[in-house]
Amino acid sequence: MSVVLLVRHGQASWGAADYDVLSPLGGRQAEVLGEALAARGLVPDRVVHGGMQRQRETARLLAAGAGWQHAPVEDLGWDEMDHPQVLERAPREFAGDEPTRAQFQAWFEEATRRWTGGEFDHEYAEPFPAFGRRVRDALASVTDGLAPDGVAVVVTSGGPVAAVTTQLLGGDATTYGRLAPVVVNASVTKLVVGRRGTTLVSFNDHSHLEAPGSDLLTYR
Image (cartoon, rainbow, N blue to C red; front, side, top):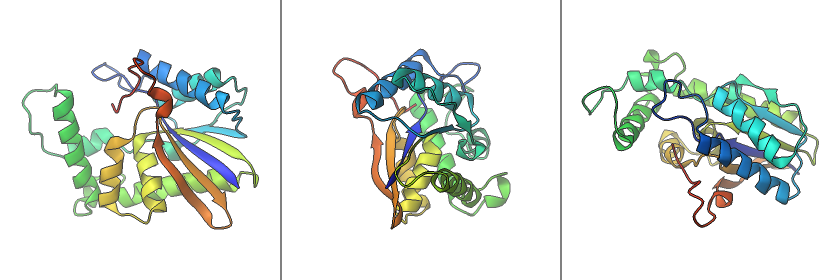
């Protein structure tokens, strides 16, 4: 069987002028994951990442931490959903321009429910069903190019990880809404591809980030 590891990017830069940049902690998360995968003896046949800077940088630092020499492949199908537009379409429940982390999380989850609900699909450049199809096609592109015993590492974002997991579980928008908020930065979701097609083996593994006193575990 071939294996696909879906990796969420490291922590981005909350509150910075450019969110799409890894924080120093996000960079360390990527390196630690690379070291952990190398310790397992994992050497992928392919490394793929989306087109966002936080995804590209995570892939680079992950490969450096693991000692891999692969030239990564960029596939925009693994980009995150358009979260600025999703947020813009949802009402705010806080005053001012700078929400706290708790306020942002509540706003983001409500915006996601609106985006995935179906009633307002016409308001989004990429409604939820189209996003799901894009991610499904990106996964097919990875699995179709793998040898029967091949391994691919895909660096993406929480939304695509949750979308793939939802699809493989036969879930719906509610399932997606429960999975997306809990995808940990630099976590690993494992898929295997065999006679039964593509199967989910594990979701959101982040044990490599849980060393006592490391403070590496983040969701945003």
